[in-house]
Amino acid sequence: GAVVSQHPSRVICKSGTSVKIECRSLDFQATTMFWYRQFPKKSLMLMATSNEGSKATYEQGVEKDKFLINHASLTLSTLTVTSAHPEDSSFYICSAHRDITEAFFGQGTRLTVV
Amino acid sequence: GENVEQHPSTLSVQEGDSAVIKCTYSDSASNYFPWYKQELGKGPQLIIDIRSNVGEKKDQRIAVTLNKTAKHFSLHITETQPEDSAVYFCAARRRGGGADGLTFGKGTHLIIQP
Image (cartoon, each protein chain N blue to C red):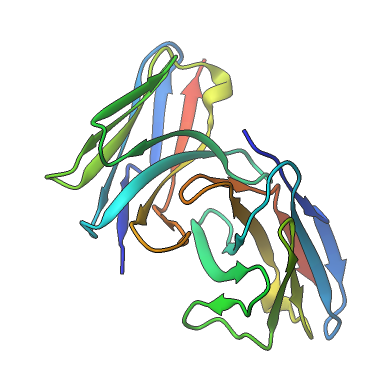
């Protein structure tokens, strides 16, 4: 299958700081990428849809000023958690679509805010 | 919006036996149904998918069936092996003009007993 690379895999940051997570499609161009959040033993919750060259579309209840998304190229989308707080601690996962249906996921990023 | 129900939440089977995980969806416009396997601390991996114009698809020990009338689809794993132990997620995506995010089931923790 196609390869989607997500970095970092783990990050620990202090409360009030910002953290940037990168999602790259390594062997295909992805006009659309998605960002999910996953709590322990729970399913994936879609946070936002990232479209190359335009503003991201956020799901209801997701703060756009808190979770900044930039999709600057066809192979890279970034999620920045701004002014992180302990409740932002979670597993964040990106996915990229190779075509209109098939989605491939990154390895995920474990964020811990202390 | 779409709602995906997945059962059971936990499934324990003896090595060599078959495992079946079932999902139902609510949106009749959904036309793509992937299954993902997620190991601890990693992103979901696509293992098999089916589109709404097909009733069954098989890939070695894994098969997926789709009943569009009843709006349910199932994952079948035969001759289970210890490495099949993981959390499995079903998902559904509706037909649309672009690449919409997937709606996931809540996951099934599959345990293969040696």
